[in-house]
Length: 630
Image (cartoon, rainbow, N blue to C red; front, side, top):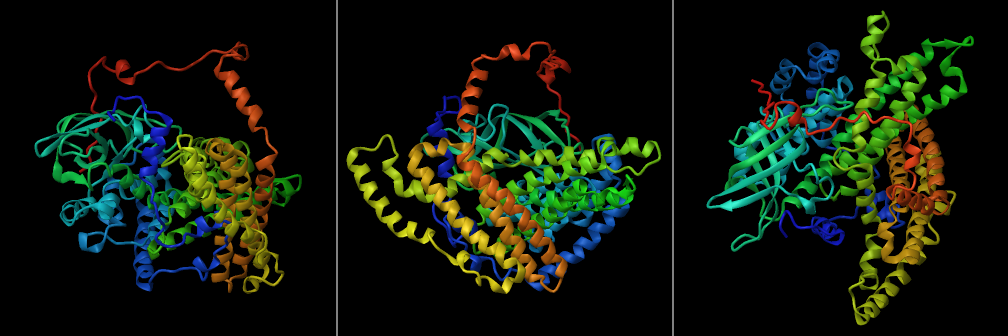
């Protein structure tokens, strides 16, 4: 397939499927949860890393905290829409760009748990700092080279990555979450590849020294072709950063539009084999996604601090506003959810550090849940602070009040619902895993291209599978009043998780029976299935963490409150599986796209600015906005 061919939905799905892991190395807690099995043995007792990892992590966090407190002024970053050079250089000297790189290559070698703690810390100062460090280490050059690079590649690039900045170039102007339509090409030419294409939203791209570029290698004699990963020098001839993009939030990130024109890259810079680029990208994202809930967790804890202080200080109708039930409910939501987010993040991170389990489901759930709940928390904080929540920190400070950047946090967190897989894509990714068992056994039954003989054989196999599986969904430990007794007051929540897990699996089976192959297109139904699973995973994480810290009764109180709130949300989602307006909404949307309701748009003006940007800033001339940091 060439880069310019029309790509069908079926072909696009096939490309994505080829990048999926076909088999699980170890049982996944998240996978089992969607199948109706609460495998508490996989996460309890709560996994924990080696003591030396904690010692190394705490030592680095102490240095990082001191640097953030004394050397970083977040108001400057927000005002100038740029992280000062001295801050970036200071982070380099501190070793922050090598947090996840092993000491043998000059890095600090933090565990995933402490790497996330570091991101939460710097993100609470200004989320742009978290984006800078995570884009470099979670999806930039270090992670794919660590996972898929040769020994020679690791020796060549990992030491550089402890003191240089990298970026990840996958997205294109017309290609978002559909990699089958990737247009950037890497044409073999002797011992080199020649890259041509345009990459959009290249976080760190404006200041990067090294790039990971995903490009299509044409299939030819001696070349298997396909999407392939390359490490490219950012200053190579033919690379031009044509625009530094600006956004509603994360004002300090160096994100650009990068054009590659006849860029020569040695074959030695190819990571993995030809055609393995998408697998490398998705595998990198599996663990890399944990950086986003880390920043969300840090912001949630900051929101809790501000909400607590303001709700006690601000008095209305003779009482602090935190004593009024309407505000008290918001405070309880922020506190409980901050605990739930951190519990979910810590558990997923410990599983990642243990290395025995493929955690793509757990990481995706943490990313999905953290980004959605983080936005809700920030929105509630703005509401609690009222007009002062809507006012900028600079304006507050200018008139003599404490400059609390509540509105900024809301703007900054909003991108996490889009970054590294939007909520909608996360729903589809996780839903594919949730229904994988059904699609596997159904196979040729729902394949429109299969003949009757294959359909009959598949039906027999499916019958055997469901005959074994369905009886397990009828009863379980959740119906026994004494089960999970070691969790004390939290046992009731785990019993709910066990019952709800079986109910979730039954709901998926009913949907499969009703819609069969069309189930994959019932995206809103599948989104609710995934959201229920996320609530159940978060509840389990909260209970397991509180049990680990049971000497601290406040942890149990927070876990109990979080689970109580999560159960309400889960029950609402269960009800909406079958009682919803999906069909009428879909009909209405078709009408909108068919211009049936354009009269509703009358009486407005459209302030949109026509592009492209380059045409407005110098005609056809290319504009290199690359920023050099020495």
